[in-house]
Length: 453
Image (cartoon, rainbow, N blue to C red):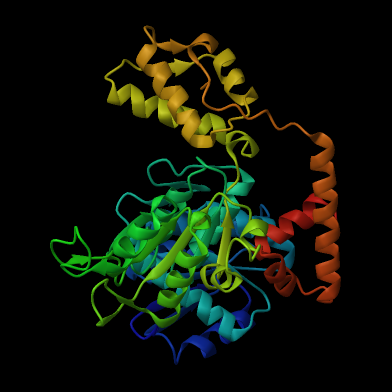
């Protein structure tokens, strides 16, 4: 992506930083304006409309609260809500940088940066800004991604939202892992809606439900007369997703024969309809989902390892609801409002005991089960307050509660030791360690703080 049509405003009280930014961006961007004093931000933004702002996290003067960057970020977003903002920070301010993402920053870069990395970060932020104009009802507010039922403020969901924000503008294949009912399809839609393909088709296929006979017809299409019931030409799902996103749900349930056929398409990027010898080129972004653990997908007697690598450029693991803490209450209130409106009920709220009951349950059916619990309670309620007796857990879900503290402690120990080994392997290089661990650098810093490493 060329920066030639974009104007950039850089604000930092270090003249050396501004000089470096000016020298780097002057040949690249349409316009680069630099400013030492953040107090001049309102005046600057009243006169011009930059496409992107580079903003320092700390200033030597001004408000002097230790988080001046957050203050000026909020001011920038108040004055120019649509402008992309990249925060410039030091290693010691990573926590503040993460908070800046919640406050509306597009990204952050750490001083001293590599020029190529800064250009890539600017490029990504401007791409996301362009895609955001066409996102429909999908938006980011603080640390909660709002798009129908995709909500969350917990740390695990914050990591997922950050990863979505990073990978959506790329064409990387994504594998979404998680239990049934955790919202894997919503994650897939969010990636599509924030991608550069947002205006193109989003085609979902539950491949796990397709028989051997239907698999090829549904995915690749067929010509009239290809088989008994083929009364007319039909375009397959892959071809329908051309230039857009193809979401293959329950990918872990397809047979080895189906896997081989799918791998051929992904490698060659063309399909051949049943009954035809004419290859049709396709341009798709692939997202897959499964409720199987990755270790099971790695079992070559059940799943081809070459296909695992093909579909798993980036992996997102969606946590079960029982691991999301106060998100349970946020989602319950969201469903409460949704179904009260749908069934034309008066304003309804939970009493404290009902909220306590919601927090104590283990939700084997995850978000989907919580949704049904609230919908049923709304339908059956006569008053304007939901009490514990109104919340009936589904008899369909029979999994026992997970409450193995010893296992949790053991897992924590394993995670800590793994982090230590990987960091040592890379001689303390956090970027390389985070990449090997499959984490964002921000997520790795949080874990370092959590384990006091």
